[in-house]
Image: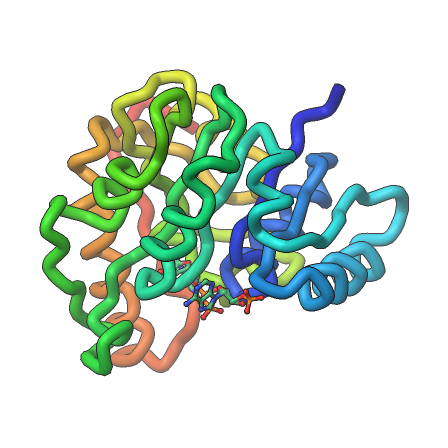
Length: 225
Ligand SMILES: NC(=O)c1ccc[n+]([C@@H]2O[C@H](COP(=O)([O-])OP(=O)(O)OC[C@H]3O[C@@H](n4cnc5c(N)ncnc54)[C@H](OP(=O)(O)O)[C@@H]3O)[C@@H](O)[C@H]2O)c1
């Protein structure tokens, strides 16, 4: 059976952008929301945009988390911990979670060009603490902006995949590869998400200073395409 990819918070800019590209690449996508009707609306809009026999459904976050094989977390940092507490007893063992969240200071009224200090070291390491045993984690997509995902053009960005679980990292690599133009790179351990998350704040500042919306990152000198 085809794997199911839940996008928790998939009604938002980042989640619906990822949903669009993954469903277009043939993945079976479940949009999650606090409100099932809102998720169904987003799913319908994306199905109409992609056309053909795209597989995108909408449901509430707990139903999506309970049904999926892989969950991509795309809610604002301020909502992550309450959501993961709500989902703690819902996950199937073996589910893989991919965390995209960045603890921007904007979450508490500060600047989007700064990140908050998170006791665990990063948003991803906080997420790790809030997942039950048997649910694995990788962190990815933090530097791939929603504006870049909004269009039909290939994106122009490397995506660092960090994690301590090789299987979850491998799945994150596969999903990054399904987004045209995105190149997955092994970002090492989960603790390196501290660096990756703070790069997002830097990219937001570059967008502001250069009056663009899609600043991204490309690494050079690697033996890769
Ligand atoms: N935007 C970007 O360019 C970008 C780039 C890289 C990473 N990210 C990360 O992706 C995540 C989402 O970003 P976004 O710009 O898409 O955010 P967003 O549009 O503000 O929120 C995404 C969705 O999260 C849900 N949500 C909002 N507040 C919530 C809360 N308190 N608890 C649970 N769910 C809540 C909402 O869906 P419902 O109301 O339908 O539940 C909303 O549509 C963030 O963590 C961000 O750091 C974003």
